[in-house]
Image 1 (cartoon, helix red, strand yellow):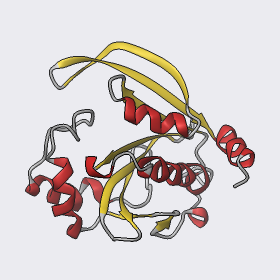
Image 2 (cartoon, one colour; image 1 turned 30 degrees about the vertical axis):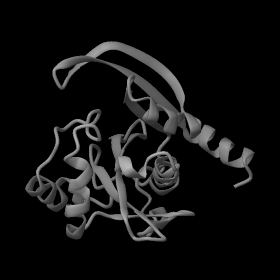
Image 3 (cartoon, helix red, strand yellow; image 1 turned 90 degrees about the horizontal axis):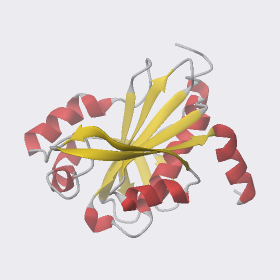
Image 4 (cartoon, helix red, strand yellow; image 1 turned 45 degrees about the horizontal axis):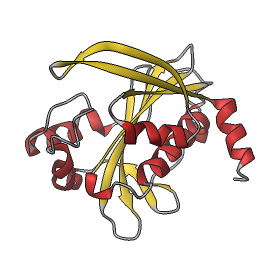
Length: 199
């Protein structure tokens, strides 16, 4: 494990606390509220799985979505996003470790549509960027977004990501050709943004 990439001393303790949210490991008790949005065809339209049954959500929580730290390149850390005031599960986010040598990662996120329009996704992904750049030591984080998913694109644009590419009909996804937008943010850009806004 590369010291420069996974600096365990800088990895935050969970939960990660923001103004309105807690980002924490996904727990078995999250299965039922998570199933509400992960079984919704509209909510999962742009994520790489079909609507899930409750048993499938439970199985993924026990396996794929159980990582809370990186052990090797290719790992993903998935975290539940909880509203601090109510304890309600709003969605979940994921940080992928794409390359050790390039110190690169990727973010993904899905939220219950009922929580939309309140800036929760932006706040949660911002905390995920801190985890990637400060906690892991990444140099570059990308987001790959279906061009039709304008709400998701708005999240990363508000966080200072640059749109680097538009890959026209580049993937056969859920029975149709999909045009992908590739956004990226460098560590220096992220730190400069923080300095500019006084945080």
